[in-house]
Image 1 (cartoon, rainbow, N blue to C red):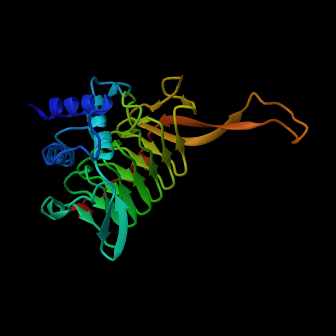
Image 2 (image 1 turned 60 degrees about the vertical axis):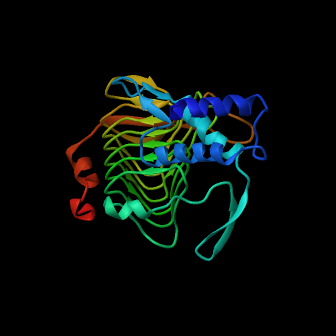
Length: 280
């Protein structure tokens, strides 16, 4: 049987109530371990791009179900990481493969959960966290105080500024997770949540919130988008007038956040260019 068929068969039994953490056998847990190994190797992914457009990302439901099975079919155990004792269904990811592929994770606080993929020539600064099912492409920088959520898909040569939150979307399984495409750069303090997609080579200003509920006013296409930022844009937060007018509790109108997207200018590209010496 293939890995996908193994996961689908286990899920059906689990969903029918015929399989749980107490009844799971060693062979069945070995199947889940093989699935996690494939995630870590980047052989399977929680979402894939099915077309050329930024909106064409789709979830791989069977992959997300495989991740959920690792919670449903495993017991919570006491574990140790350095001098820290913690309780979880999974150990942390083995990092022996990182050095041979040129990927660095600095000490005292870089946490990579089992089932997460880190590509070659990545840099992961402490403290930072990459959750199960996340995919981090080659040459990407995960800076200090960053979180990459479960199933998030981060492309190659991406720069995540310090204190950036990439949300996770594990359930419902049919929903695509947060995606940051190749070459994008997010300034410090950005938040990307609820399946939002950042198009390739786009540059996002610091402290910008990107979520499907906040409109993107694209001044290049002269369109308003929800749920994605097109490729090759420079984006930042602005506040626009809200439909809520004057109120007894405050004077004047109310405002709500929005995102404005423009063409990328040369000086913006200079400010975000990669330093190859960091990856040699």
